[in-house]
Amino acid sequence: MLETNQNLPQLYRFCFLMTGDASKAQEAFQATLREAALRSAHGEPPADRIWFYREARWRCLELAEQDLQAEHGHIEEHEVSPHAPLQISQLHPDELAIFIAGAPEPQRSALAAYYIDEFTPREILTLLDLKLSEMSNAVARGRREFQAWLNATTPHDVYDEQE
Image 1 (cartoon, rainbow, N blue to C red):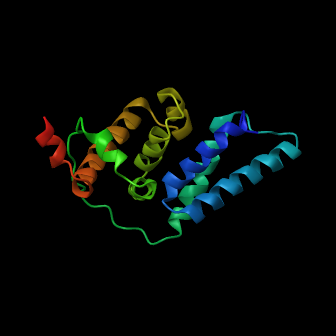
Image 2: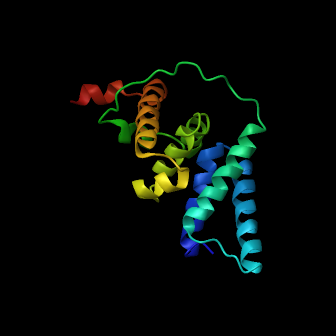
């Protein structure tokens, strides 16, 4: 199972970022582990940790489709601030998950994989089955949208005054 059990908390965190909801994250997480156990029992264990995240990703997307979906219009973007890490530190984990879970695909998956800090860029490409330019655009746009959201939800003008 997942090279070591050390990766299980990260798999759950990925599910939480993808769904923005603890019960849905737990459902996707547990279903992924059950599927891995069934495959192992039938002599076909998952090939690597990427399998777990890919499987969890699809389960999370299916769960998210069961909810009412907001229409995606134009989302404001701001250039990433050097103070973004300080702004992020003010967030509760639920707030970050709600933002990421609300992003369109493949941006949602790219941001979730990026923010768990578990994968190399090459592994994220494999996980999401994206081309380099597609992933780069998804992450860059997501980070600019996230910065606009951070600016609207956390006090960023305090940092500007400190300079």
